[in-house]
Image 1: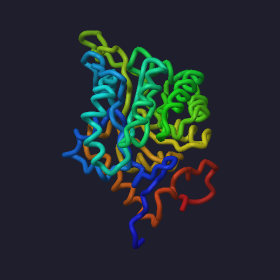
Image 2 (image 1 turned 60 degrees about the vertical axis):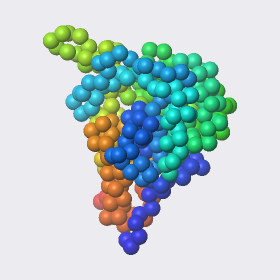
Image 3 (image 1 turned 120 degrees about the vertical axis):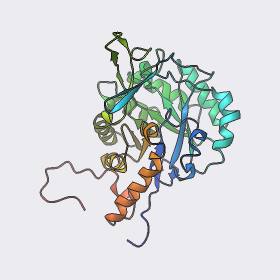
Image 4 (image 1 turned 60 degrees about the horizontal axis):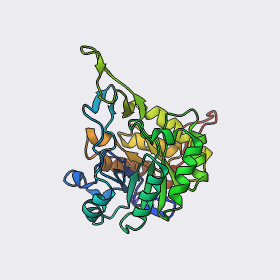
Length: 315
């Protein structure tokens, strides 16, 4: 192949230069990684989840390493929408990738108000609605596990914004396709999944939970097979783009999600292990395509073969 592979993908009407996006809560407000990553190479940036008012989050300890991953119960600590608009957004507006803002609330009215406030900010390309955080005692998980609640939250947000609307889904449900279809019916432009899986860890000496919140969200390679299965299911069950999240540490991981049907991927826990994981994954996807003479990354999206094999690998 004489030319470099084309890594561009689209989410609704938004074109990304590549399918690699930062996952909310793992990349701060991007400035924190400015000395470690070429931010302008990213496909898009999703900033730390925002609430109407500043939030301190949960008491420590609130992160613990586990085999093949980590548990966190940060509690969605953030600066609030006003401080974000005045102090964080100006830097983000200097970057070339689209900026998405993750939002959460404890009532439907919170989500609607946040969406309305973000609608007025030109530097924000879209909104990611967090209805699925497993370590906040109010809202979040309660909204994300019930199809009716999901529909009402998404509909309320949709009424307040014309920006691209991503809905982030919880894996802590019986059938994620039911939740996905409810979000789609309410007006979601795309779906991101999965959020963390609820888990816990115990200190044998003290016989106490290792996290003050008792339970937290499990992320990292341990959840990748679950995430991959759910992305594949949702990609088949809906007509809007799906963004894959969950244990993506390498380009190979990201490519599995794309082949399963994801239009893009979000990188989360890997940012804690290797701050430049995002750009390494971009390079790895490009190398994979070039080595196989695949002209566009879009050509591999949703190409999973599930029928019994009668020959060698897919061309």
